[in-house]
Length: 337
Image (cartoon, rainbow, N blue to C red; front, top):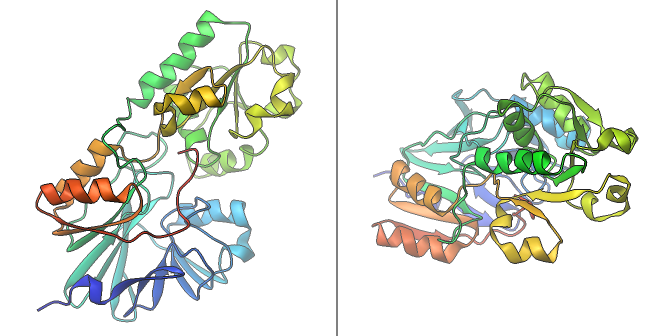
C-alpha cells in the first residue's frame, strides 16, 4: 500500500516540507532546498540555497531580488519535465496565476500530492492556463474562499475603465495594480479591447513589464509616468502600485479618476474607505466557484488548504465527499490580488 502523503509531507515553521525529498515548497524562511511556485514576494523569499522553479519565475526573481539573493544555485524546470529529488519525482504544471506560475506535483512510493500555489481559472493573455492534475492530496489556496466572492469577467471590468475614459476624456485615469501579474494582465486586456495609445507606468512597474516583453508577452507602447508632463497625461491611462495612487505622486496628475484593480474591490467598503472612484474587480486568484470546480476536477480524496478562508472551503469540500484539512500556513497572502 502506498504511504499516505501526511506521512511524508508536513508543515514546519519554514513552510510545507517534503521529508523524503528534503525540500520545501514556497518556504517563508531561508532553507537549503526550495521549490518555488511563482515570483510573488509572499511565496518567493530571498536567502535560499538550491532553488527550483520555471525559467520565467527565475527571470522575474532576478529582477525582484537580484540573482545572488534568488538562491545560491538555481535550476529552471520546463513544464512537464520530471526531476528526481532523492527518491521523489517532482514536476511542474501551469497554475494560471501569473507568468511562470506553476503547481508542484510530488510523487513518492506510489503516492502523489499536488501543491497549487496561487492560481486562477479565468483567461489571462499573459500566462498559461491552469491544468488540473489527478492526485491523492490536493493542496490549495483559499484567498477568496467564501461564497460572496464571484469574480466578473476581467474583460468586462476593463471595459468599465474605457467607458470612464470616454465619459471623462480630459481626466487622467490612474489604476492601482500589483506590480507582478495584475499590471501586465490589465495592459494586455486593454490592448485586446483596442486601446492602442501609450500606457503610462510608474517606475516601480517598469522593470517587471520589461521582463514580460523579453519573455514574449507583448504589451505595446509603455511610457514612464514619472517624467511625463501633466498635459500629456490628460485622457491617459496611468498604472501605479496601489500605495502610490494615494500619495503626493498622484497629485500631479490631471484631475485623476482613481481606480484599483483587485479581487478585494468586490468588497465595496474597501473601495469607499480608500477613496476609489472606479473599483475594478480583477483578480489573479480563483473565486469561490472556481475553487470548488477545481476540487471537483482534480478529484483528490483529500484537500489541504494552505491559507485564506480555510474553514468555509473545508466545509464545502466535505459536503462534496472529500476530506478537508487546514494547514494554516503563516506568511502568505497579498493585499492587492
